[in-house]
Image (tube, rainbow, N blue to C red; front, side, top):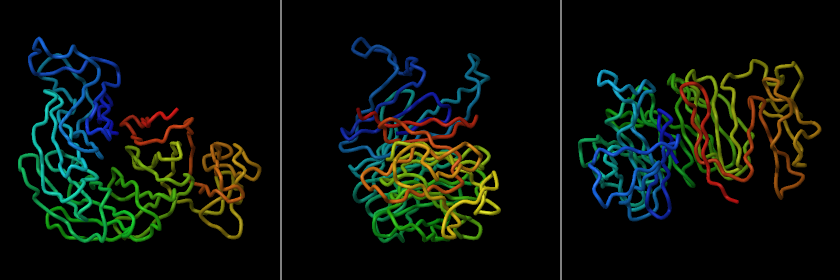
Length: 363
């Protein structure tokens, strides 16, 4: 699932190999092609058909939030292109004006797990089952760079905001995050620390911090200049954190995942990790980075320490079948928003610092 930068469109890729794009305000999606007698009537959603297997990733071309004026002097800021990747080994480029497929990019051997536009458009990166990361340009049918180094299938990618670096994360076996130089294709950093498969990657808008999340419910923040781990944020249940997004000022991180919650994290490293905002000592047994909550599953459990920011007890914490086991919530969690039963596939900070979240409703 993917939201466009101007918050007008949402696209979903399906196991049935098609893509559906909705207008989030319910307005009709315009097409530049002249409507024929057999064309469907204008609708707020469109199906894009072309892939021959499950669609795993989508990426809207970058756009800026601005006035969509009637005069030609005010350019429209709507994204014009959509990228999709699939287990049919291809990446497709779609026009969001004509609602047709423009290009099919081939090169990966095996499923393409992820595709991402670069921050300025034109360039995009992909990664896949063949353990490679590839850089493409919109106007070339074949890739222009191939990065090799991961020991197993590469399932996550993210761009540095300066367009000069790409980050990739490998899954089950490798469990490392690598930083690649786009111009040379060289690996310049390797981040080790995850003990589970890495399920999401995001670089902060200020270009100083990389956030990576894993299937065990941990988020690790990395200092890109030093190449070291800043801290580990805990609070999500197991199953994978599927999406991360930084606020425009790079001070707050939001995450969403399989446990059906959207969580907000403070990026600032606490000066005294044993204390929270009210000066109350947290944790037991000299545990500097976490406060423990006993696994009774009740909201506002006794012994639940207030979350940093004084939002009250950490609620929405359940441990399911594993009764008696401790659930760890680090004091840098600002708040948690539980859904009823929906795993959260995508979270995104808008430029006005609102969080848009999307998931699949499973009644």
